[in-house]
Image (cartoon, rainbow, N blue to C red; front, side, top):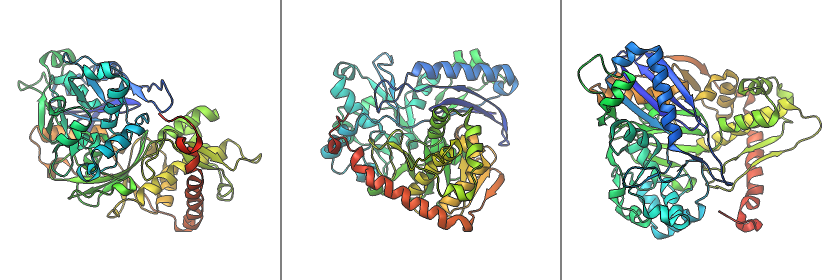
Length: 497
């Protein structure tokens, strides 16, 4: 048995996986995000610790026998978050998250200080990445910065808690702007540009390698691995998207997925380092050795739907999606346009100042029209991201909580003009991938462990809808182009971060 822990933005998910690759049990605990200032997004690691204890206690209560036979633990998690620790490993401040936009100015400084940044990292400097956050701390919180002994990513802070080891994997480390992604090693030049050195960084391993062992006291506390004499190995794990790809068996060139989580992601695996920073494409290491991937990221996907649920008075996400689905084709062409940039945007715009917009409201519009506009806007943003990537080979898998809606899945296939497949376990891809990485670290082979789960449903693009969606997408793109200068604080006279 193997345990996967996926530290997301809105929840910590735990999954038990059998030796045969079947899901034996799951548990989750909710998380909340704090926004103390505009553009800011933070979580305190103490919340992650509480969630960890909650899911482990829940598993112990429901699946004690399975938990006792666990041989390995894998970790997946939200990328880019900055957890600053002092010499005693005390957390110095709340973690600054991936969707935090405060460090736009520091991105410019870092790009100027290291002109070859994009060549080394395969990425543009964006506020979501980790390195600019530390530059912000050095400028705005110098006393705290001076006390930093090491910096960890969110899932790696959980690893420290579980094992006492400060380790990261190649895929998650790729999102820091400190990694030489082609060489799969820290860049001394980029670390120095942020006032740090290798001594501040965790040790690096591949996602399928062992990174440490579960503390015996925690094993006894939760009843993990007590059915066998050996210790419980902890795998390197992966950033949430690379782990999801492992969970869906998407490890070969051209294979990919669409993720409808808090953020929206399109992921395409590759066998080479293939950067395309000009269009804000991310080029990262995969969670398995000798593999890389490209990824486009929009910052508000399912989170935009959650925002609309509260703002428009729906009971829950399912009610909003049902209302959107009730709108017939003749009404959709007159629906408002929605720019889903509630937290700024990455691919392809790299604009932390971009904002959400509803355009075209009139008295004929009701809840259903607005609900449709929000879901369509998220889907259009994903289409923008897809157009920046290398062409996927065949269908894309669907992962993330948003994939539970068959109607949204079909709409997305129509807008992307790509077949989409829903696989068993797709809604918990990160946790499933983390458990598979644990199985690999415990001695499993890639060919046996990383099979593609059974396809539950296919969504083929409806060619009769293509012209209408293309027209709406052109209007969507034109709207952003017209408003881009308005979003720029320098152009509008607003004070920047």
